[in-house]
Image 1: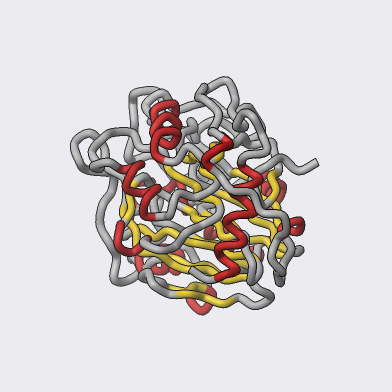
Image 2 (image 1 turned 90 degrees about the vertical axis):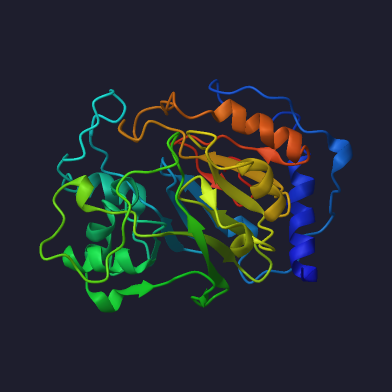
Length: 335
């Protein structure tokens, strides 16, 4: 761990202690972290991009909009939500992929220069073809994501295929470390639409079952030489050895729907070095509009995850996000 990394983490760790209670809405209740377990720093390290120039907005599911010094990065932007029956008990894998709502997407997505895609299920990739084609943003994703986007008409030269282990420098202090990862598992230790593609399909995908998972990536985005470092997950499992040593300032942790992954939260937090700020994601009903208040997915044990974080990393501050709040680099609401 570098000196800059240590200083950055102690700054955010100290900030985590400055609030008596975490930012939790009514959907979850947990005890506040103990100040006695953390160390505060008095001065932030020098940065290429200042913490104050970084803002974050949750786009629901695992999606994020990250604005860094006037530049926009999107992760798993699923904005034009549509019904599949998933939250009504009548899930239909033959659901047609809905057309993107341009006005709505522009409102929430802005004009990104970079789009990071964890995997190719519909609730992570459905709006990416439109965004890529209309903004010219570079897309980073798996080979399967590449082939699907090409089938949707995205310029192949606009897409960067990654496998995990790459550290990509986008200039101005913005770097992205690609992390080989895993998709979450249901109670049967399985998941929807597995499979990978080695070539574009003959026709553009029409239904959600035409969008296989195609392997899963996580990303660590660092804004400036001094941070913050943001760990982004698109599913509630991870490759422990691939994520070892990342030590992010803020970890966006996907909430699991089952206990199929052994000691998921304890292993993840220890692997990431007990991040100062933990943000649960992928716990919402992602078939409700983003303009409306967050509706929790009843199958996701959000309170259980928060409780595990409290036990494993009592000095970490837990922030349960909502759709309407713009957060700063330390995940405190911007004023």
